[in-house]
Amino acid sequence: MTYSKCDLCPRQCGVDRNNTHGFCLCSARASVTRAAKHFWEEPVISGKNGSGTIFFSGCTMRCVFCQNSEISRKNVGKGVSDSELCDIILSLQNDGAENINLVNPVHFAPSIKNALLMAKPEIPVVWNSSGYERVETLREMEGLIDIYLPDFKYISDEKAMKYSGVSNYAEYAAAAINEMYRQTGNVKEENGLMKKGVIVRHLVLPSMPLQSVKTLRFIRENLPEGIYVSLMGQYIPAGDVSDDNFPEINRKLTRKEYNTAKHEFMNLGFDGFCQELSAASADYVPILKD
Image 1 (cartoon, one colour):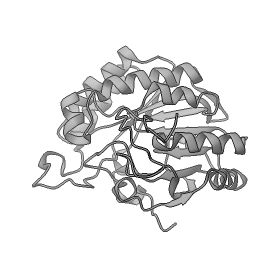
Image 2: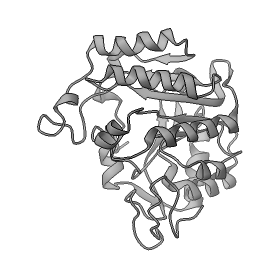
Image 3: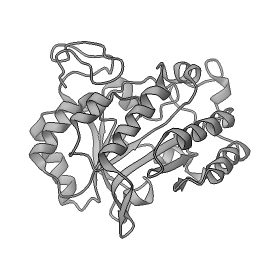
Image 4: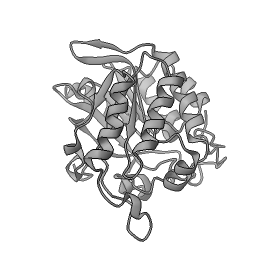
């Protein structure tokens, strides 16, 4: 696991990120856009005191609807050393955060590993990711991550390429999530807070409720039963979405669309969470100036 010939994500762009930027738009120096307590994750993550969330710059995907496109594509964050990242982790812990929540961490895995080894946090560490990951990178994090919070965005390769610019997404996500489960086992809670395990998130997209149904069925058939699933209805048009580019997703979800996915979620008997459609608001997008 190294930045010198980067192979951290499935793209394996092979760039020496010590000297230039990889496909993720980032160098080898970890870049943080925001670090603060966050109260709008799943209840078992946010708890009463909030999740100690660290947002990293850049991204290995190119989701056209990205709500955090300023973070993921413009590299607006502040570069931090491994020891400075350690200090951020400890500061959030000292501020009473329920956990350390690493958002979009894959392309900074070596720095995060070093920082966690220095910090030795006493609260759970959350790996909050896109699901587009290599098993080999995840294995390097074993023993340092308590909770995995990956997306499972698509079952369709065609949709994954059209909306996120990636191929074989479902194949990589399934392998990654099975590795995450191998490391953590079944979900473990104490006093309503998650201490160990995996929550798989799926965002329902406009015009595609049947794709969500197929994705949920795939999750049920191919991923361990000991995980939680979080069905999300918070989609709002953002990023590159417009009537000229992607008219089919240039709107919020309808209640009928979301209920189609929600009915399948219930029918499949998942443990986890169904988000309310009221969460589809820009109010929940992180504010960088904080």
